[in-house]
Image (cartoon, rainbow, N blue to C red; front, side, top):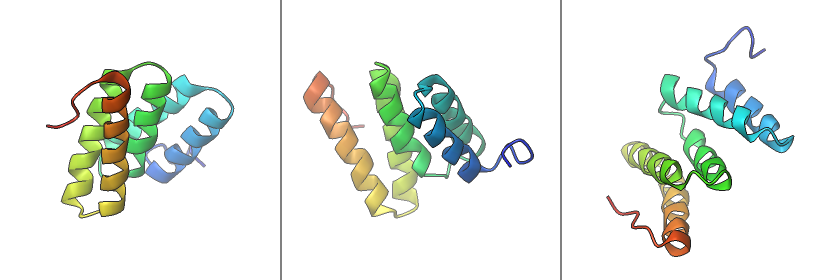
Length: 102
């Protein structure tokens, strides 16, 4: 299905989950980055992409993507996602002594 509808955010997200499940984090990241580019309002992208960045020691990218997602979650009044992204940033702050505030 993905090959016939390459810009479907749900299909790309589902494929990213599968790639991650089978250990192909670079491919999962590639798919999630594509979603963030062609459908930036798809909120599920930001938390998972941030976590994958963290797991691959790309902390600055994780912080940036969490902040980007937080802005969109705030615009959409999605408090659940906003809380998850804020928590992810706070955990980075604790672990790496980085300031996550804008």
